[in-house]
Length: 113
Length: 222
Image (cartoon, rainbow over all chains, first blue to last red; front, side, top):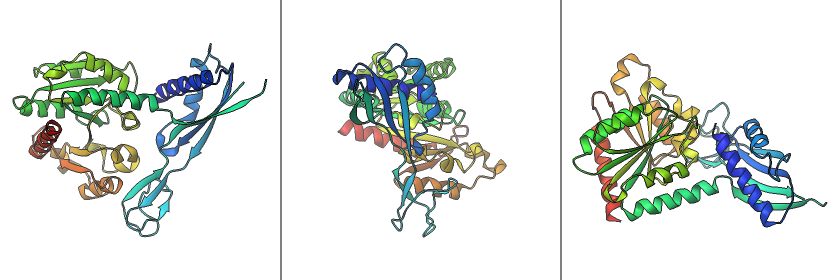
């Protein structure tokens, strides 16, 4: 359900940027979504099709680039992607990590006419 | 017509974050310590509030923003304690956002408040992604949920200042590995403070209350 508010924010951001550029149509929105952000792209697409009707973003395609979770071990500094929710370090087996990436949810660019 | 690419490079939740900062500035003007309480449904958010309010209400002026998917059951229980409460019904929404909290603040007498609790919607997936203007985040994890919750919902545990392990009175009936749980939480969040409590028996609440009192004092002294 939180995809709805994310989609609303995303649409209003895209419309604002398109307006600043005096564009008449948004054809594509490029998004970067981290694995840990909890954002389900299918849901965003579903809400987007619905709420973008009657705007210049209607019919725009959404492109999602998923960034994997990357963790840094606080003990040995190894950077790794966890497998099966096992967040312990594959090198030294210590538990204790810092999230390096995977939480992002941002708009990279929009394509307009 | 030619296609033009506009680089944006902005977080989708920027608008929420700006509003959250504005909320926080407003709360800071009144020296109010604001705490965002998050947990799964049924972990004990309302019980914690009731237990905390009954022990603290003579020491400071408390207000509560009560987030709920529907109903005002929790707000009514809080109201019986004689503290100011504003209910936000999210109408199915799974988290509170800064905009909802802004409206709720308009309905509270901020000049008469020292401590504001915001009870978020019961959910371990996304409330942590939405800043509200809080100074501290407190997460409740209750023993019957199991000791593996930090591994299943790491972002929630990584983003909190305090974890309250609730319902410890049920320990004899459960296979809950307390050391394993704490190790997982600290692994995600080395600065976190963990208190083991039972809202039912009151066990462990003293340590939580003294943390709260010193946090209120820190806020007032700023």
